[in-house]
Image 1 (tube, helix red, strand yellow):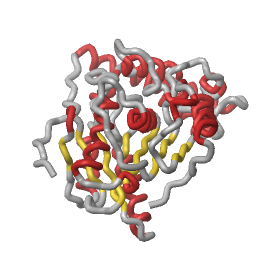
Image 2 (spheres, helix red, strand yellow; image 1 turned 120 degrees about the vertical axis):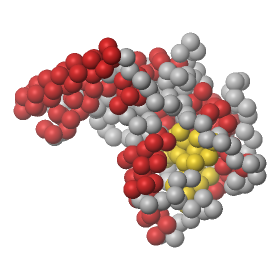
Image 3 (cartoon, helix red, strand yellow; image 1 turned 90 degrees about the horizontal axis):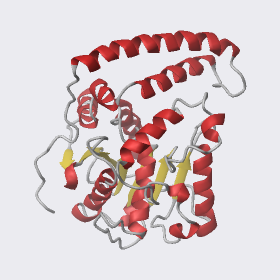
Length: 330
């Protein structure tokens, strides 16, 4: 095993200009107005609205917040993934264990790093937002239950470069390097390694699987001795196409607006072009012929704006691969 490298901040703190700080005040007033308006409209919401009154208000405010704030302002408001990991470790009285990875990323261990099975996790957030504190809390609690059930598992969280400092294929390259580190540096067998993520992290999950079968020309190939133990995604961002019906039919139900998704997607792609590594749902059926995983689990809520795109993707997987176990076993 190679010597561990010194840690270098993945996403340094952002310093806002006076104008940007003043704009935060204006945005706050706008959010308050949105909340008041939602409290009124929620009383007479239609079938296409949120299922509960409280959810209607919360999602309306979050939608406004996400598209109203600039990415720089969001980076100013939210602590980085590394900072949230440190906070989580301190609250749980755990010793943080972070690894510096190739191409500027970091990996954060949660659990016993000598566990037999490793879950490499890619967080969501449109490639613009960090992993919230709740990510670490959720998966630490999940890990506790898995360990109590006799499952020897550890989580490895990737801290990747956020946009606009990093654009495609930076994050995909970093995700591949996280997997490479687990396979090569820690010596795990592919069957004992699992990858997964939510939203943009689901995008990276499918991008990594694509790279394993069809190496990206700008990313070093990763040869495996066998398929991964499994992969899972939650509301994976499998398409940048805004023409799916669910973007409008679920517009008032989901907390993510088409406007935010479209903007974040453009920033992520940058000067590049959309391809099969970015848009899993747009890849041809043949693309998934040799997907390198024993199992693939896809979670999605019926009120998600991505439901149609994800459905299209899952149908293609089923057509090409037939039955892939929709469950993961450690």
